[in-house]
Length: 251
Image 1 (spheres, rainbow, N blue to C red):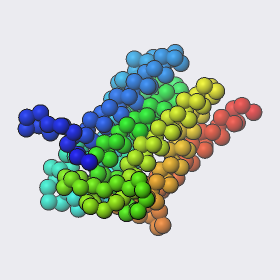
Image 2 (image 1 turned 60 degrees about the vertical axis):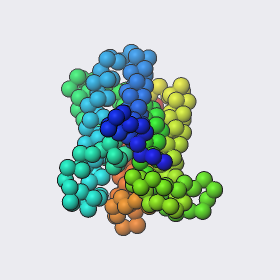
Image 3 (image 1 turned 90 degrees about the vertical axis):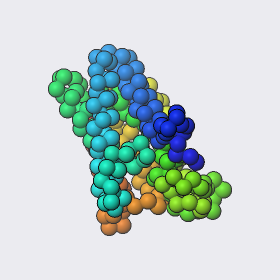
Image 4 (image 1 turned 30 degrees about the horizontal axis):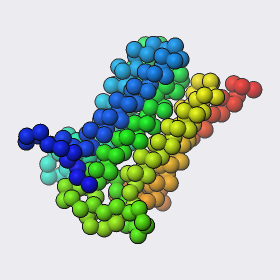
């Protein structure tokens, strides 16, 4: 896997940047579509999405730097080299969601309805964006002898070289795609606000918690769990809470 997708003269176009950008655009596009169908002010979707994306990138990078400070001790400017990889998706969800929600709140918009609009798009964005992780070699897996193991050989890759590893980046991508499809099917039957978001948080958390056991890159530790697993437990609890609100409202 080559982290550089192609070059224009002396300018390298990194696969990580291309796939992350494509994932963000797809997510915003899906939110616009859903908002139009639900008779919300769909023109707010691009602005909300851009605010969430920019804030999410800052949060994702901040969490990555917090987990891997040794990578930047000799050159602090590398903190800003996000096109080379190094974003933590959980940080993106936390910071991006908070910023987007604050903007929608300032516009006096129905928050849960908008969350339901964005949730499938976030899953779709993950499915595409994680392909960028695969090319960059970040978020790599543990050594394995399974037939679908991948071996990174490019010296610019962030993954350990010349040993078969779990393709955890593709696991994440597949999890995002499955989550997206489930939310689309569920959305045809669920009309109550907040429940699609709750289902997304539960599915995302469950998939992420499991995939974490196959990851080899350091993600912080809290006892037997990684920092990311602890964060996903919080997401899972929020998802259960949103579903419990649905049940109380329907009773």
